[in-house]
Length: 101
Length: 372
Image (cartoon, rainbow over all chains, first blue to last red; front, side):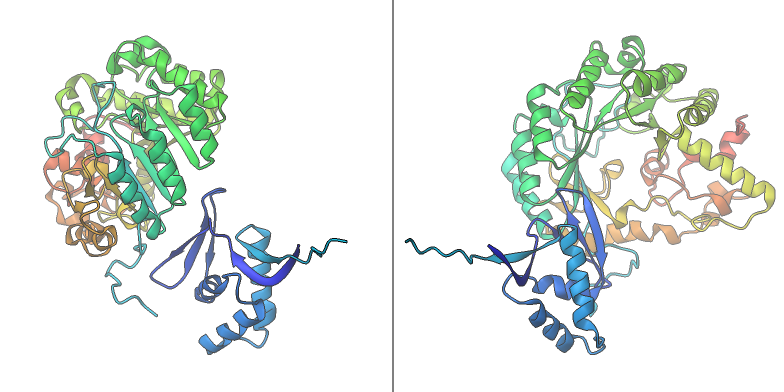
């Protein structure tokens, strides 16, 4: 099984959105929580295991006029950090050769 | 983009982060200072599990993070495991407030298996049966300690609350020794019996008088140094002792008003949490159980949270200057005072929007009290 480039939000993690469009990601299994800004919220909602990271970046660039040039790098770093702490995983693809000899 | 339903309260969370639920109106004990029973505004009736489970689904949709289950005694419910499973299924963590008597290996193992328990808080009011049982009933001390040891054996975080009253105020040193040295708890919290519920009927025998309050403050301030901060309080003598000391120092130095001083800023709970009574009535707090805001599974909690006029009025309490109250007239400490608990203000004065006379530094000093 190999990792795809399609991130997927950990379904156990709760997204708590606040009035200022910021939000908290809360993992009830570990009690860990992290605050994310409105762009982070938009990324989180797109991590469905179907979109690739590049597709997510393109959508974010379309949605947010002030998206920086280095959006891909910044969003990749953001998603990597979430993955490191268990908030995000990646879809796996089955590369096994199932043929029998 | 701002939500079109944005309320006027600027620091308000969009939904409650924590919900305090009185999961049952039944209890195996009848403690002499219980805040819960003998409240004429409360209907003492339990809801069936399916009503609670439906409500937990709603809490999940609002992103509620924590539920605290109290009562009554939550462990008296045979269906407690099913209720806790409902919380786990809906991605929440939970805490339980208990007298400890009904905690056995089976339920402790179950709680541990959920991996979602913040803590189970057990009430311990004495270092021995004589002190503890004086207000809680014969046999309750042994069962509380057994409950704590059961939780510890199953690696469930056991917390302890000590409620200070006339019969245990001289036992605090021994209580700290029992909890922190013999039971090896990381810490414990303290409060004192308050003029609520059953306590109102037994106030003369239970509530601390001025001298006892001073003893409690001095002892707890000394013990918290001895035990390096392992004793905590958000109300009661230890909290008052710290706060009143800060207020008196600020006044003596002519310091500017505290950032939260001079207005009814206590408490901030209604901006992050809400409560539900055992009969399903939504209330701002268990200490304000008479303020019915709605009913679970009939009224949407989000609607109550964001648009209840009574709740929003309570949230605006913090804009009321203490100088508006005759009770505070001429008081030098108002720039440093928060008015304290609205629940106690209500039971003592009949008004929620009033400072609590119970936590008045000036009154304490006028009665002969001193700050150590």
